[in-house]
Amino acid sequence: SALFKAIPILQWGQEDNKISLHFLLEIRGEAEQDAFLEKYGYLSEHRLKAPTSTRFGNAIREFQWVSQLPVSGVLDRATLRQMTRPRCGVADTDTHVAWTERISVLFAGRRAKMRRKKRFAKQGNKWYKQHLSYRLVNWPERLPEPAVRGAVRAAFQLWSNVSALEFWEAPATGPADIRLTFFQGDHNDGLSNAFDGPGGALAHAFLPRRGEAHFDQDERWSFSRRRGRNLFVVLAHEIGHTLGLTHSPAPRALMAPYYKRLGRDALLSWDDVLAVQSLYGKPLGGSVAIQLQGKQFTDFEAWDPHSPQGRRPETQGPKYCHSSFDAITVDGQQRLYIFKGNHFWEVAADGNVSESRLLQERWVGLPPNIEAAAVSLEDGDFYFFKGSRCWRFRGPKLVWGFPQLCRAGGLPRHPDAALFFTPLRRLILFKGAHYYVLAQGGLQVEPYYPRSLQDWGGVPEEVSGALPRPDGSIIFFRDDRYWHLDQAKLRVTTSGRWATELPWMGCWHGNSGGALF
Image (tube, rainbow, N blue to C red; front, top):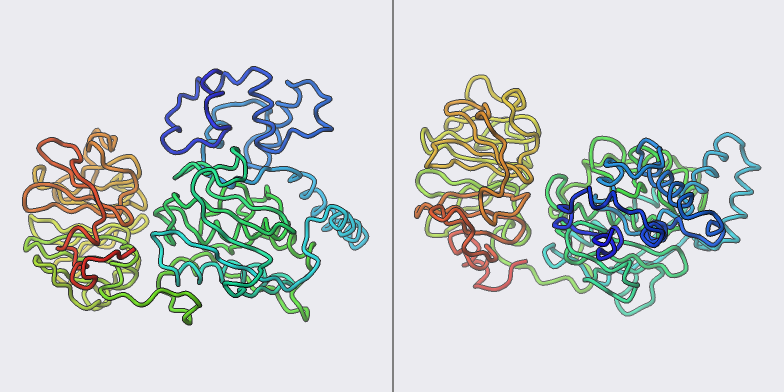
């Protein structure tokens, strides 16, 4: 209970997730319970008349309901785990009321729909025009500006495709209805809205009239489905709030408080579409709403939009130097292979990099956006991993029996990185906070694995690549940073930015030592 008082209310980051759930189960005092109610928008004037224990139980039920958990009113372990997940910082206020009204529109017809429109008009939580301007004030330091602008444009288009709304980007010096800004820590929105780095609350927004959405600058933003935090999904969600939408309890809804994962299903659920159309109507001209699958929004870094105002001058060097890569490995001649999308680059030991080549030209049948790669220094075979499948190539030819389902051997789905570990003469896979050692000559996990990544002292979770070096050390990569692990000491000794500090990565000459990200 005392420990809970010292924590910013339910906005701890990844490191604070290690706090024992036993302590959190001790939220018994009225002050702590009222803090919970206020944080999630359940403490209102008309509810203060009820006893604190009743208010707290009702708040837990509403939180469980909007989070799609079994509704018990008990602060159980599943509920506490849900609270530690990264989520939108907007309170769940009036979610149940908004949901009830949408359902009434479905079953009660036009009369209920008109009552709903009048209620929203009184509350003032919608725009009273259909042409809205927006401005991207700044963007994450690690992502290229053109890609971020493309993601913003697509996020607004997502909502205009299914409603009567239209959006346009305002000039840099003119006014804008909606402003998107990235901040660090406390940014004058109150301590409850202060950003806390990776994890915790990733963003929050304000309903119409104020027209602002704020994002945590220190979050590990990316455009990947598997690594970092997908910026496009968070942008689209927070824009929904600036249009007047509350959180949704519908399965797979974009407006759920816990951000949607990109997949094969449509980005907007039926409830998302119904919510925005109840405020602004259907697409102009009665056209059919356009819905697109999430997998179509997974590579904004590959976009080449028309040059926007304020765009940075083009930089030299291979594409991976200015954003990130999907996977990396090295062969017996210390030649690097760096993979991104459906292309790869070869980098010689002296740092000279080749032109990009298509994966299909070298490894026929290999899909784009692979997630991990490693070369066996025993036989020179290339191993690739993506999803639950794995490939093994001997030279340009696929080894018989591949691709195969890796999960049959106990391998993790969607691994972060792969490494051939010379001392053990084994392949190692990394996934989140664990690593897996594979049996020699096959894709089977050795007994007693997975083990904790803490065995590799100081290596972060969710790495994007791992390379053995000639001196016996290992370099781990994540985003624009690297960690140098001393194998004798079994701990990280140095870290930095790989594009500007590791000339053998092929970025040094093209950039003349300047900043790449």
